[in-house]
Length: 210
Image 1 (cartoon, one colour):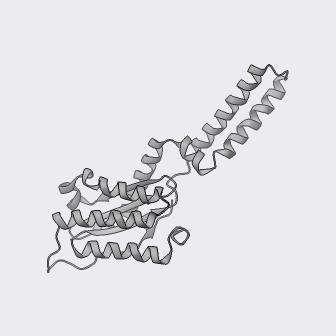
Image 2 (cartoon, one colour):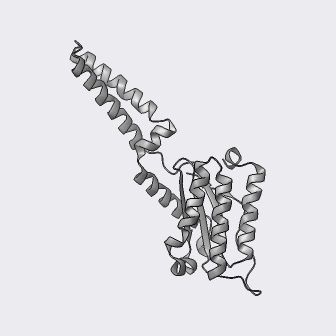
Image 3 (cartoon, one colour):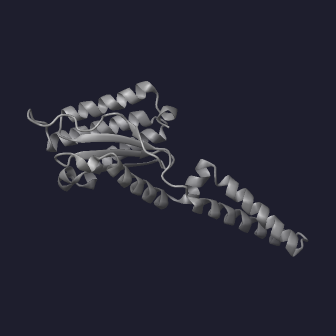
């Protein structure tokens, strides 16, 4: 999946950005990408219901002479069309709804935080930089050692930078900008000292199954 969206040079840029950020702080930054966080079956149901309702209303308004059996077939056909159209990404995103996409991305990011061992760093300084391509959502999660001092509001600029990159069809630049912002903030609160442990987690961009 990573190969479809990120060229080798893009992956190298992201890895270099992580390495540069970690050289300035005790943070352990892991960038993670997923294609899609949820199947959103409700989007298909909503698409089918909307087209069914529109078809029914059109028959009633135009007074087309149809039998109940014919009306049922029209409704069935409309519902099938609506369900298929709802598979198109822009339509599916709209029908799923922003709140549900945000919740799905947040839940998937929490899973990724544990899947990639960000909760196991020595000083509790793991930071997940997570992007969901279908949802156009980004999530940044810091472990207890970082989050208790910084709070979620400190991550917002990084989230905005990553989302902006995805909207511009340039997620690699979004990741690099977000990582640079996080690295600068971490360097202020958690500067790296000469006796601090080396790199605990790999710096490369990772993917997670949906």
